[in-house]
Amino acid sequence: MHRALAEATDPEVDPDRRAWHLAQATSGPDEDIATELERSAGRARARGGLAAAAAFLERAAMLTREPVRRAQRLLAAAKEKHEAGALDAALGLLVAVEAGPLDALRTAEVEYLRGQIAMAQRRNLEGSQLLLAAARRLDLLDAGLGRRTHLDALVAAIWADDLESPGGLRSAAEAARAAPPGPDPPRAVDVMLDAFAVRLTEGYPAAAPALARARELLLALNNRHRLSKAPGGSGSAAEEPARSSRSSCGTPNRGMLWPRVLYRSRATRARSSDCSSRSTFSRCPTFSGASCGPQLG
Image (cartoon, rainbow, N blue to C red):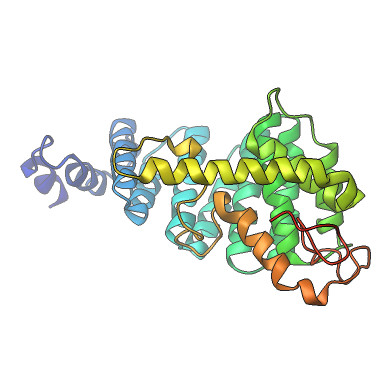
């Protein structure tokens, strides 16, 4: 039946439906159909259909004979499942990914995605530990990506509100300080990572200039985003710091992580009078506070 439906579907009018029916009619590996499903996944994602994109990619993986390519498609499907909010399904796909051949970069990607899922499931300390492991692995492979991941790990550690545990706030901050240096000129992510890592390891006075610069960059990025969304505005996805405060699965989006962390810190300002104590270290206002220095905004 699926074969007949595929033949009856115009590939120009509805290529995605045709690719799906062809896939359903195929029992063994078929790279041509798997490639068509990947294209369908891209179109589905562009329309905002994350669940559909995940389904296309998962089916493409099932039709893939070559083990490395199969693992890549399973990992891509797991990422789409995560973004669609199907967290348990994403974890199930990651088990299948880990059963295949993985190089160091793919291993880091799996750790990173597991960390994101743990954060979405409110397993904050575990998420911080996984993200930190991924960041350390990426330090040796891609310094730029590693620094972005260190920033995510640091945010996760702040949400975990644990100072001393492995993968906790102190470990994440010290690892960020030890990460390879960023490019020159630095990206916004590099300025923010360095500023907050210094703030959490050396204190507010040492970090004040870098924090002020990070704040200025964050405000500039948000202003640029607002202008790009205005009628007649322009802007790329790479420049967009904040689409919404949360992704579809409930995890804070990368662009909004720091504003939300700052808000969380300020919300507990009245309970945080000693930034050096274990109980208040991670709750001390990041930019400002009663005992941390003057308020910068």
